[in-house]
Image (cartoon, rainbow, N blue to C red):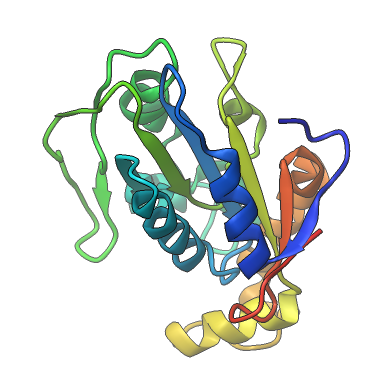
Length: 226
C-alpha cells in the first residue's frame, strides 16, 4: 500500500476495493478508518467488517471511542479548548499498549477492546482476549492519522488506512441530530471546541494525504473513493 497518490472513491466501490486488498497473509492486518466527528466512521467500519467476514476472515472490531480519557483529562485545558479537544480526548498510550502493539505484526495477540465508558464516565477493564495470528483488525476513530498512531516503535501501524471525506456542514448536521449540545452550524461559537479542534488535526496531520484511500462519504448511501 502507498499513500503517495490519494485514491478517491465512493463508499460502495471503496468497500469492494478494500475487501480486495485484504488477502490471506502471515500476520494480522490492521485497518484504520478515520474522519471528522459525524463522518460515518463506525457505520463504514462495521460494513467493511461484514464484507471481510463473508470472505472467511476472523475480524476484530475496535473503536477509539472506547479509549477516551477521563473527563478531568479531556477538559484539563478548559471546557472550550480546541487544543484540549485535539490533544487530550483519547488515551493514546493505553490504546497503543492494549491494542496496537499486541495486535501488530510482531505482537503477542493478547489485547483488550475498551478502557473507558463515556456514558458512565468511568474506567472499564474489558477482558483480555487472544487474537488469531491471521485476524483482520478494523479500528475506527478520530485522529488516528496523528503522529503517535501512524508509527509505533518507529514502524508503520496501519496496513490499510481510510479517510472519510465529509464537509463540516454535513458532519455537524449529523452531530446535531444525535447530540443536543451541538448545533448544525460548524462556526457557531458553541461548537468552537469541536470545529477548531478538528481543524487543528487537519492542518497539523493532513490525514487525507496520510491515508491509503479517501472516501467521499457526504452521502453515506453512495460513498465515493478518491
